[in-house]
Amino acid sequence: MKALQYLNKYFLKYKYRLIIGLIITFCSKYLALQIPQLIRESLDAAENYRLGLITDLDLVKTDLLNNILLILGAALLSGFFTFIMRQMIIVSSRLIEFDLKNEIYQQYQRLSLNFYKKNKTGDLMNRISEDVSKVRMYFGPAVMYTMNMLVLFIVAIIKMYNIDATLTNYTLLPLPILSISIYILSRVINKRSTIVQQYLSKLTANAQETFSGISILKSYGIEKNAMLEFEILAETSKEKNINLFKAQALFFPLMILLIGLSNILVIYIGGLRYIEGSITIGVIAEFILYVNMLTWPVAVVGWVTSIVQQAEASQKRINEFLKHEPEIKNLVSTTSIIKGAIEFKDVTFTYDDTNITALKNLSFKLDQGKTLAILGNTGSGKSTIINLIARLYDTDSGEVLIDGTNIKDLNLDDLRQNIGFVPQEAFLFSDTIKNNIKFGDESASDAKIEQAAKDAYIHHNIIEFKEGYNTYVGERGVTLSGGQKQRVSIARAIIKDPKILIFDDCLSAVDTETEEIILNNLQKVSQDKTTIIVSHRVSSIKNADQIIVIENGAIVQQGSHNELVNKVGYYKELYEQQLLEKEI
Ligand SMILES: Nc1ncnc2c1ncn2[C@@H]1O[C@H](COP(=O)(O)OP(=O)(O)OP(=O)(O)O)[C@@H](O)[C@H]1O
Image 1 (spheres, rainbow, N blue to C red):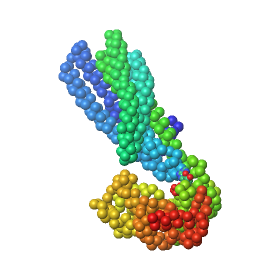
Image 2 (cartoon, protein in one colour; image 1 turned 120 degrees about the vertical axis):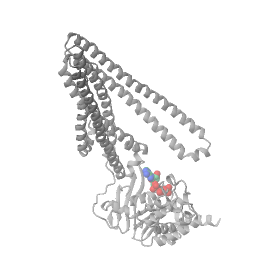
Image 3 (cartoon, rainbow, N blue to C red; image 1 turned 45 degrees about the vertical axis):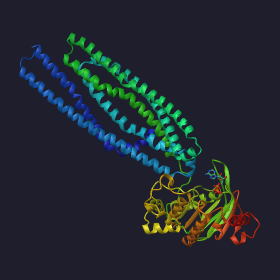
């Protein structure tokens, strides 16, 4: 129960609803438990008349009519209270489920990139959906049925012992057996349903991967293999499902068997005691009703125990993530004004999962409003420099300074607010083009959106679409070409109007002419902004104020285009090679 203690704060938050739920449960069950007694009184009245103990038939009839009305009233009121009880307790559990999901989601947002590298998306999704649902069962049904069971048990047993202790002992005899068997069966059901869930996840993941890679599957003609793989998974999943249903099918027969046993005991022992003259015939009827009312709560004890165990396991998994401290923390609560000067001082950085030292004692300085171009072979460390500027990771040694202040001493939100980042692989949300651009500035007017699209040289493409800016781009932007996605992504960064603009090799999917136009536009847009351009093309970067060439995480060349083009080295070679390609 240790993991579940984390949830006590939610019990406290909804304490009034839960307390009202408890009081109403008591009222509902108390009323329901009056019915057997009224039936006993009615039967006894009829029996006494038959035996001649009462002679006035009208009195018996009035008694019976009164009892019928009371039974009806008690049943109706008890039903109404049960409805309110569900409203209080089950609704509380839904509210707690909502709060917990929000808490986990907010924690996910806080966590650093490293966390996402170490944990699979499927696992993250599972903890926020499946695990939270299991925990909800603890707040809802488990709490409700436990309250129900306690009230029913206490009130009914007191009533039963007051009437006949011997008959009560015999009646209650099979109930612990019922509870234990249901507990064992529930554990089997839970185990099997976990396996069914796992197979369901596998099936979904398989189908999702097949659908996202459908063009590759089709072009390689391997749909049949994919189908076969799915079929094998579906077959195993079906078997696991059948196994689960076999166990579930035992649940009700087992309950009916044990209730039957209790009923037989009541009739047999009750019959003997009736013959002895210790009890009336009405008492037997009253006890049979109690037995039937108590059976479900007793069976529920087993079920609730297994719900609580499952919730405990799920909450343990949730707590692992909730208690995970983000590696990159915002330690500054005051506002930081960002102007945009960037300096790397002897920076070394190693990715801890691959142990690759991506940057080695790297130093450079970029004044505010200037443009830096980074060039280098693939895997040389260009994107890593950018990741460090956006503080997606912290350096191992050395310092990254913005406006002369260590990046760790700046307000992280302000820093990221002032960076417009266009990644290597453009990511678009499944929304309209307009909203995808507006993501950079939620309050942007249509005119501003259009201007950003014009600067990114995508406006003319957008207006050709039937729905224009309201065109849905599909999941991850599947309806746009690679170059179009890159340009929408550029418009998104421009509209943000940040102090620092970063373009990470984001023009690779556009032709050189389009690239030229975009670069000219960007020069205008980024006049007073510090700009970093990562590229493999000399044409993209030749106008930069400063160019650095990276090799194996270290700077091997540094200078302006005119300086570097006359020096023997990587830059000159690349320039000449690309010049040659252009002429060909
Ligand atoms: N997220 C990551 N986790 C672990 N290692 C990484 C990660 N990203 C990059 N690396 C490693 O760090 C090194 C530098 O990668 P980086 O992405 O900075 O190169 P790059 O110059 O931007 O390459 P490209 O031109 O192909 O984009 C590479 O060897 C790469 O394998």
